[in-house]
Every structure is written in C-alpha cells, then in structure tokens.
Length: 218
Image (tube, rainbow, N blue to C red; front, side, top):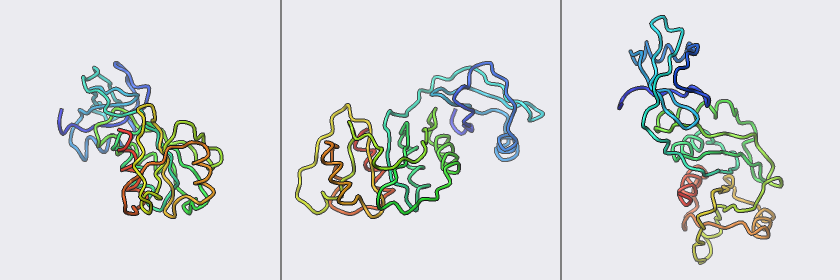
C-alpha cells in the first residue's frame, strides 16, 4: 500500500467504525492527495479506510497486516531550543513515551506542547508507525525516578572511560540540556546508580545526542 496516505485517527480506532471527518483531514485527502482511500492507524494497529463522497464521514475498514515498528523506549529529556526536531527524530525512531524534564540548566521553559504533539503525530504518519508516542507534562529533575535508567554522559568526551554496557532490561534514557547536567545533577545520578552512557568523544547538539542515545537502547 505504498504512497497511500496514512492518518492517525485515535487510539480507539476499530474495524467498522464510522466517525465524523475532521475538515483538515477531508481537505488533505480530497484536495491535496486527490483520493478518498487512506490508511487509518492508532493504538498500535493500522486499517484500510475511506472518506465519504460528501467529505463528512470516515469509514474504518479491515485491519491490515502491518505490524507496529515502535518500541518500548521512554525518552526523558530537557526541553531545548530545537525541541521540535528532537520530538520528530524520537518519534521516527519509535519511542513509546517522551517525558520533558526540567533541569538546572534548562533554558527552554515556554514550549507549546500541543504543537509538539502535532509534530509527533505527523512524524508517526510519515514513519510508518501504528502509534503516536505519549508526550507527558514536564517534571522537575528532583521528581525523576532514577531506577533502571541510563543517561547521556558528556563526561565520556573528556575522560578515557570505558563505554558502559546497557542491560536489555533498561528501556529509559535521560538526555540533558544544551549546557549539560550540573555538578549536583551528576552527583545525584551517580549516587542513584543511573547508568552513564557515552555518545562519543565529541560534544553533540542536544537533539542529535537524543537520537544517538535512543539508538543505544534499540
């Protein structure tokens, strides 16, 4: 079904449903893509679907054989200037959950999270996922559960440490802000037994660091 539009309909989409068609979806399908047929997805599944001739209703058909390529990784990250790029990349890499964490050096405090959710939805549609990652409300660093979590440790860029091995049961990773973690945050991470992960010997932009960090868990 290559080149057929894919649209996120919601996590409760099921075969046989008839739902009202959002005007933006109707415009995209009939005026931009010039079609009434598309693939609807949500909740981990994908279905054949059609928009009615009057553009007011969507009919959900049979479930397709396409399996969701997403994973069970949770990304914790400090909001950054290019949070939109980070959300886009993390979604394309299949993460299940995205949790913003406010650290001491976080500078991007006024993110439009509804826009970020829209970016995640569009990235899921493009990347052949059957699900859209959950984006949580921001939490402070001191409320973060550091049990069974690894973190991108820029200290590896300066020290001749050996790369830490990550066990298969670790499914959460934390990435800091542009300025990195503070000394007190490093102390907290180390004391809690959080697993430091090297991203190489160069200092990366935060959005690229997040993408490489996710790759460490896949």
